[in-house]
Image 1 (tube, rainbow over the protein chains, first blue to last red):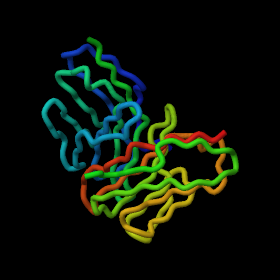
Image 2: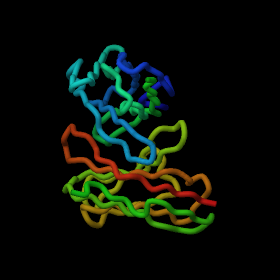
Image 3: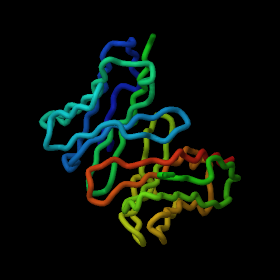
Length: 110
Length: 113
């Protein structure tokens, strides 16, 4: 049973436009959510997080939205830049640590 | 500040051989984790530890053992390697009770032939 689902394996966006990455979860016990970014041959790095009691968190070009009733969260990147091309993992956090989705490969087109 | 360091970075094993992957962190973190990443599967938790001397099973623990004898180190052992264990392994650590991110090592690429 996949507790964190990222249904889009890849996403292609033009440079300067908005990138929207989506994630659904089934585990109501997650009390916070994180997005990680991963480049090839490197470990994942933390991008942004949100507590389950909030519905929005913003950090520069990155904004995460949480809709608890729909068990859905999304990451918005605006404007998208070439360096944003990477795999993005949606992650649920709780008492047993982190549960990762399968990832979405974001490709920023020039 | 090294953060999380994994050794080795690459390894090729023959089926049935054993090996230990070492993870070291210098951030005084309580929690440590071992994940494996396979194509199309994301990151799956193998084992984790919530403090020195403790270990717990994750999503895919079979075929692996772990030990946390010192707070800064978390060892992942393969007693009898199988081709299905060919993967990229990531270690991570995080603070206790904090809603903060985990920090990851650079990964170990293991091939079992």
